[in-house]
Length: 159
Ligand SMILES: Cc1cc2nc3c(=O)[nH]c(=O)nc-3n(C[C@H](O)[C@H](O)[C@H](O)COP(=O)(O)O)c2cc1C
Image (tube, rainbow, N blue to C red):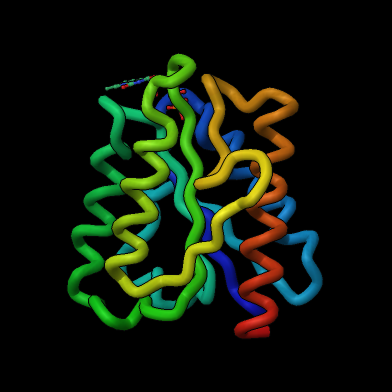
């Protein structure tokens, strides 16, 4: 089985809802095994066990929450060992144009520095799913698309 971790930070539950949608869709892909955990329960060492890493955050001043940044900063001890894994990111903001895309891109930048593989999306949310507050129907569809796309890629590469 190809293993995928969906990890997220969420203080008021919006990003957690997105994480569940991403994870459920990823788990629907045959050959994918998906684990969903808040970032506080994940150590840098845990990241090594997965073929795909999908990370979500609320937008805090246009950037990911410090808790997610810290996980990635601490993962420097394994620098090089995440290379070739598949990545993805999603974010929830308080307002429209509140920094969702900058937050997603900041997460993806960190995954790219690790040498990970990131697929863009030609239609819909190009960089990753965004929500304003809790995911609405449009956003839920984008979350499911990310989950399915990452899982299909991970299964193709590692399954
Ligand atoms: C410290 C802090 C900074 C925030 N900065 C922004 C921001 O720059 N832009 C924005 O649109 N919303 C901002 N918000 C709102 C959150 O991104 C928004 O409420 C989000 O849906 C919370 O996600 P959660 O329910 O997963 O915690 C901020 C909230 C907090 C607590």
